[in-house]
Image (tube, rainbow, N blue to C red):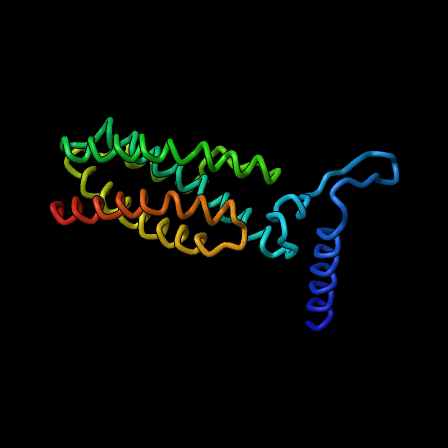
Length: 193
């Protein structure tokens, strides 16, 4: 057991050391391998690698959140049983699409490639919702959106305090949009209980 723990710790130390190597380095065969350049991820004046990792994690979560909520909105617009749900979905789709461009600009400035495909779990949820009868769709849609907005608002509230000024400014700018949509989701969900 001690041998396995020691081996795992050595492997972890090797991974950490590997991550701290310069971004571009030449291998033994002359090939160039590229690692994430943490100095580009960090904002100017921020020297901590942890801040860069937090920034990258926030950007990844935020882009996936926007993509998911946009897809939920599209689905509600197309499949919603009531006009209110269809309009709510259309509004979410339009508002969150405007959030995507500045998010991509921040990622580009930091040299990050953000995911453009939703995780399989979310793709399955969307497919299941798409197959659902309209009479059940509205209630479940609002429940899921409400849960997602709560998580997303917490994510953005945390990012407001980020040491990375680009991230904190982005979060400050778009947190009110999420809070507004979250309040609307709470209001609509009360009608469907």
